[in-house]
Image (cartoon, rainbow, N blue to C red; front, side, top):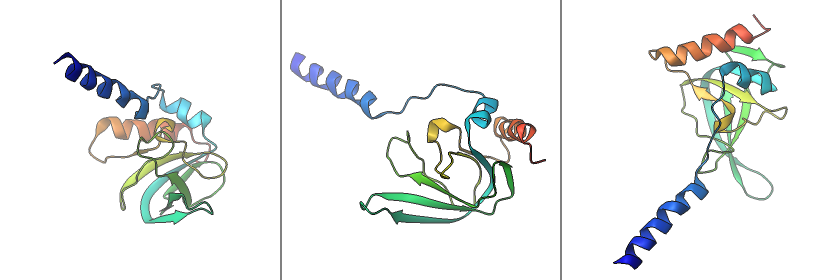
Length: 136
């Protein structure tokens, strides 16, 4: 019995190894730390591979607005299961995406998120980001 409980405890403790934990940050901090900030709907999703056969997601926006940085419609996201270095996107959904200088999203912890039209917290987040934008 104790061996069984020990194995369950060990399995549960090891789940943290695969989890991504984020420090909660404000919308202003995400904006400040990003090289580029895009806002728009996802128009195209592609799974592409690098020269080492690692897959990643190529995401094309309608680019409703470029809130920070030079114009870009395409960003990239790692396809890691724990979302620390990337995330999955949904076709047709509206997002705010924060990227580095190479157009890679800064992971789930980097602030990129779907903007839900009927969720007040989501709209507040978008409005806060828009207020930070020099591209008004």
